[in-house]
Image (cartoon, rainbow, N blue to C red; front, side, top):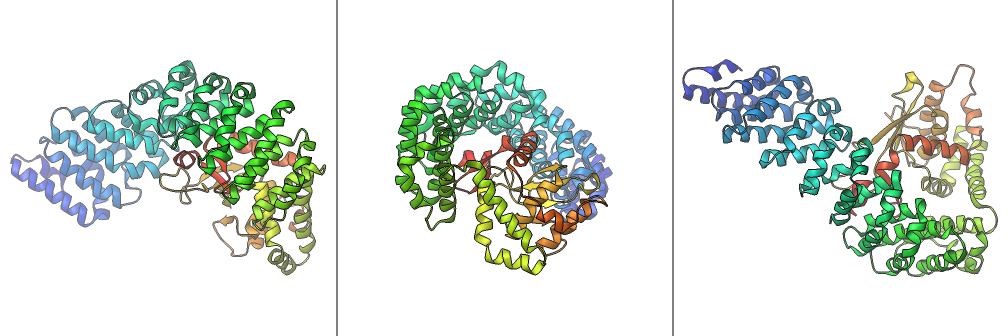
Length: 547
């Protein structure tokens, strides 16, 4: 591959050379990769505009078919992108080449964080303009910045202006961008809220939810407009999440709209929306008095016409939340709840038992005891690995129920790994439970965070891996017990407890669970995930919005 032929005196010879370069790159992209920097460098000085799209086409063969080639040619890509941006207005051919190069970068930017951080600023600058190239750049920036929104922070004012002006490609970036540029959003909160409340597809609600989680006082003045959006067929469930957040943090702002919320709960909207609003009612009901007099019967009534099992289970947990300060409020409804405690559906049955535990005086301590009982029986069987395996076979439902109950409060990773072993950290990988379409965290791109509290997370890993709810990665051994034991032995100090002693220790207390939850909060897990009763797990904000 000889790029010098592109600079000869004969225009026809130059064109022929460009076509030949593209053919060579298409025939054997791997062999062409060593020439990629030189090929991209041509774009800074090639004399004929019509050659630029062909040269970019040749480069695209390599960039899209040779893994890591974009990373290895990052400097040349950056220079080529800058050259094409500068020359795009000179001739349509330059603009076509720019459009093609930007489209080609979509895949590499999604998989390589360092490359994205290097190239996204140039793409953001392009995205702020007009024309097809700018529109393409906005699409690439929106997708690539989902996992690294901080790169947009220097451009937050421009991004907000573009989105509010109707450039919808970037609207999905706002919720992730907010934590990195809070001052800009909060200083212009009225304009931001007005846009978000009028946005038709739910991305505006995701932004309002992100703000409400940190500054609920800024969103509370807009509660009336939020409640008015609850009837939306598309965005209603997303706005219901914002109302539920305000119910927890600013309940006095929500109380005047209790009738409207009750009407929405009793309406014919999707079950996901009713579950979220039932959550709001549960939080409001904790205030007791006349409010609880209305909320508690409403939640019980919702049990009667809940259309799906997951809706009944979620409603039971919200009923429990409402009555936790005054468990005696459950007494008039005890018969109905006891009937549900015999329900054939496991998660409905377990939720009803949790409500009964509160009524009978146990509350969280009773649930904690039940978790501990399962772990204690496992510990007793640990004297022989075969006995432990037999216990799992015989008590699979009980262990699954225990993890289902725990998982509503403390997210359980899809996999655990020990890449952080040298620093004595455990790596937690979380996958969206509702992964569909443009999911933020599908199975092949999980949310990843490290924790130094490896011994507590391994407690969860043992139970979750035994029942097949989680896996160890990489899978060095097929047996879950041997795998967890191997990780434990690698982590522990020389004079630490052996694995048998570790397994016999009590399961996580509420305080220990709280500390793990705070670790996830610090890692921004709850900024991008929320529990979804329909999916029976934690779902990313993008999938929740789409639903």
